Length: 198
Image 1 (tube, rainbow, N blue to C red):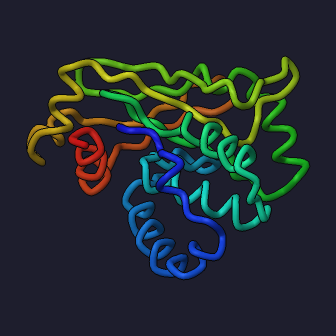
Image 2 (spheres, rainbow, N blue to C red):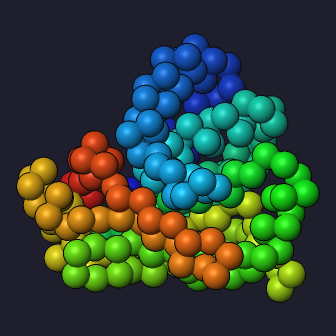
């Protein structure tokens, strides 16, 4: 998947004219690409649209207009765009109570090394992006992860709903502090398949 180019990013004033329509479309896409991973985590599979929205919203919120600062945001968020035969996701730990969340983050050190994309015949370990360095005392509440797909899995995802379903794809977490499994719904598989065809 091609990274976001500077020419695709609108200035704040121009973005305001399309924001409502663009946000609405991407939010609808995100619903197809989001899943719960157990009671305390959710996952969003990223693509060019979700990354472009993050860039535009960051520029808008922080009122970033300097060329170098705009490019920095593009470069930072482009790390989330999946490469060829790759899936990219943001995994969020969601525990409302502050004390409970902090206790979990301390117990779940190394969490990103315990996330897998499981297919019928293989398991692919997540690779964490270096954007957030994890300390030895606690994990982070947000993890940016990528999965490098085998040619067989990528090919099946690019295929028909039947080949996608035959993969039996699921996300798994197997950390001693948190174990969960979430099968990918047909609409999620279809959306990811479209990504791989781009």
